[in-house]
Image (cartoon, rainbow, N blue to C red):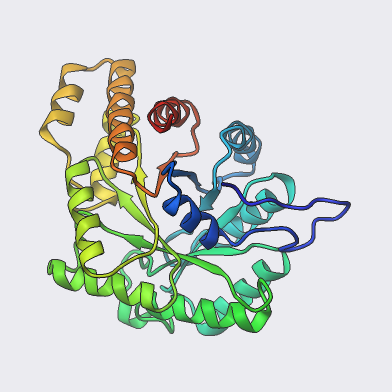
Length: 321
């Protein structure tokens, strides 16, 4: 089920738009259990990058995602470009943009101004993250929000104040870590932190990327035991190259790379296309398994490229059918 948007002359914020939290909840409760599909983009680094990015976005539009998210650099370093991409997607496409918003490096006034900008432009959903500090900075010295749960609560309050959705407020997503968070080795505390974000008002969870579905299934069951009952969307990234694999290992610290995956990549040798095919095949297998286990949604980390993600989406569509 997808939200409808009334377009008659100028697009009016929220007119005819179904709250994304309701969309995801209805999909999660559907007897067909068709998982929601969503994509992540990041702002282009140069002016020359805008045209190819929007050509890619037009290709993703054909896949009818429930939403698309836009990343936010460490400490808000891509703030202006993130805003520009979010608003352009909102104005020029039928897609539902979901901007990332982080605690680190932001005051309450900073966040308030950003939320006002989004509210007046009809952006209805925020992905609230603690975020990473700029290189060399310390978390405790940056910003007015110590934890993501504090940001979630502030976004809900501000959304109500701004009259978003008739006072209901923004839909808020948060991050989940099926294989743990490197700064919180105690897995019980990790679930406590996640539950605090949900109790603060989070409507859904998007996970860190993972390659081990067994870890995801076990973590999702632990969430259920902890009475974390909002939709959980699984984060999937097709491995693009061996260099990309190394970069993932650095950025997503703690992510496990199963031996079977590493064996397939090793068998590909130095063949760039064979490595890409092996990564896509693994992601396809993940998606079929997730669909079989009635996952609420799949969020693709696209790296602003469409080919690999579209191939995996076709596999997911087959599994859903």
